[in-house]
Structure formats: structure tokens, C-alpha cells
Length: 276
Image (cartoon, rainbow, N blue to C red):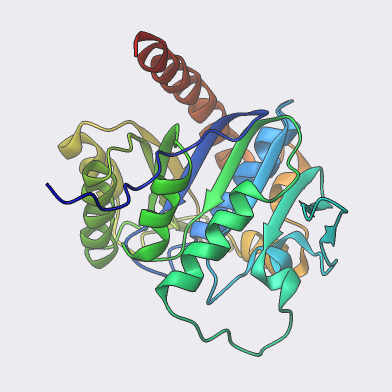
């Protein structure tokens, strides 16, 4: 039997209790908007939160958090994450700001993802939220090989095209043995400011039906509200207004449901590790 070098087992990050990946099968469904607002909502609900932007080709977390600081390196070659709005974050956008694209192949991506997880001085965190790039490629494989994930969230709009790709994301997480803790429907409907009627721009209820089909919790829907997009563009996410803000309420509801599911998943993972 040939002895190839075995893939090292995923290693927990000291001090971090839960690691949640936020993914989608396709781009443009508001995955980063959800990841950023979810991170802030969790923080405002009393959790210690970090956020990793693993979208190396299109990093939007710095813009949405309104920060252009450079992460600092200490004498041990550890990267200190950028702090904004009570969240610790790391993104290639802090290291390579501006419009110059990064052109690189898969192995370099793997290296960056590993550094963002293992070479960053995160300190003690209750949640590390991982904002994944769109699709089902290299970064997800690198992620599950590097750290044990507590679970994943899948983001979709109600449109059939988006849901088809969301189903691929669910199957992808199943293939790499990561539990999907829930589905969130983003841009679910738009309320006309004049007549106050709901307009279903991207259809309606599809993500909830997909959740039922796969027997996965439906964590709620986020309305299509211009202020959510404006907050992200200005670096002042709507969740900063707190859970009583009508624009932010959907994100806080998702955050509260997620904490219960993540606590249970983390406890089960802990049991499995102890049995071994």
C-alpha cells in the first residue's frame, strides 16, 4: 500500500467556540450583507464575534464595515484583525485595497484561507462567521480541511434560479459533512412606500419550501429594503440601529434562531469528540 502524505485533520482554533459558514450557490443573493448584519446582531445580543471574508476575488466586508485599516503583524508573525462596530474581521480587501484584482490559482487561495483562520490573533470568541465566496469550489474544501465547522447557513432569494443554486450549496455541505443549520430568504419582498402593498419581485416563499424539502430549519426572511443596501454601501449596516429598528428586525430574528441551533450543534460536536 502506497503511503501518501495524509491530509491533516481539521484543527479547532483555540478560544473560538463556534464557527459558522455563510454560503450560497450563486452570487448576488446578499450573502455578505447577511454575514455582516448577522455578525453585528450577534454582537449586540452579547456574543463575542469575529468575521472572516473568504471571498478573495470580490472582498466586500471592508466596505460594508466601513473600515480601511491595515491589519497589524506582531513579533510572532500573527495577524491582528481589524475591529469595527464591535466585530473583529479579516479580509484580503484590507491587505489589497482598491480596484486592482487579485489573480491567483487554487493553491494560493488555500494558503490565504488557512492563514486567515490559523494565523490571526482572534482571542476569545463565541462565534466566528465565515463569509464564503459564491459557488461550490476550492475555498469551501480548504475551509473544511482546516477547521471543524459547527454548521452552515445557506442564503437564497425566492427566485427559482437562486433556489436551484441554493440546493447545490446544501448538497455541497452534505458532501463535506457540514450540517446546514438553516436557510435564510433574502430580498423576500418589497413593500411599496406609497400604497404599502407587498410586491414579490423575486417570487415568494421558495426558500421556506426548499427548507421543508431538505428538512432544514427556515430561519426567516429579510425584506428588500433600500436602507439595507444603503447601510452596506456606507459602512453603517442597519443592525447598528438595534433589534427594535424595523429595518434590522429580520436580521436579529435570524441571529436569535441561529444561536439556539448553533449551541445544540456545538454540544453534539463536543459529545462526538469526547467519545473518540
